[in-house]
Length: 241
Image 1 (spheres, rainbow, N blue to C red):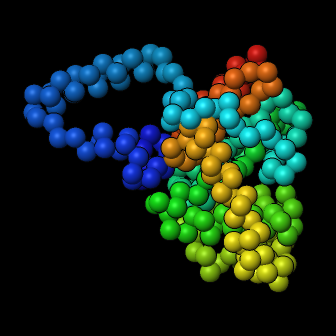
Image 2: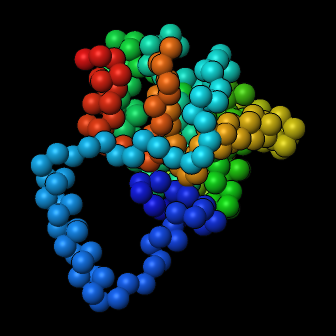
């Protein structure tokens, strides 16, 4: 379910706020409030929400050599994203992050780390998509993973019967991919489960969910899909620009 620029499971308490029934007088009051808020935002637009669930962002797993990294592994700013291949907001944010890496990441200042957060509660094939992506990484490495991820988002909602076609586009051997995928429960599921649990531990309640990591500083939490301009401004502030 979409809410606030992210996909969240139906059992999350937040969506219930959208199902309240208002009387006509309350609706009139709300109308006035909405107008006032619109005027405020036309004057000064703050960042989208940068807080989430009840977890602790400091529990984010440190970026390591086993992570899927786009950009310099030694970049001073790391954007760690927890994502779901069937989340429509993630698709848009995926494009934004590519733009960030192409521009702000060109000088080695920013890198992007992709971690799995399949929302199995609302996306029936989310775990399969994550397994397929991790098998591509296991068989053919980091570059193939990113190519496969791009293809998955471009073909959303993803039909699992096309995994082999998409893997071939990413330059992956069909036989090697098939072998890994057939044994996914014992080869890549532990990694996916660990990614998802780490997202929950840090406070995630939906996707996309990201943290900006800078050594020696408290992680900055982004619990929805930012626009390019908002994310660039936040990164520039983080870098002291």
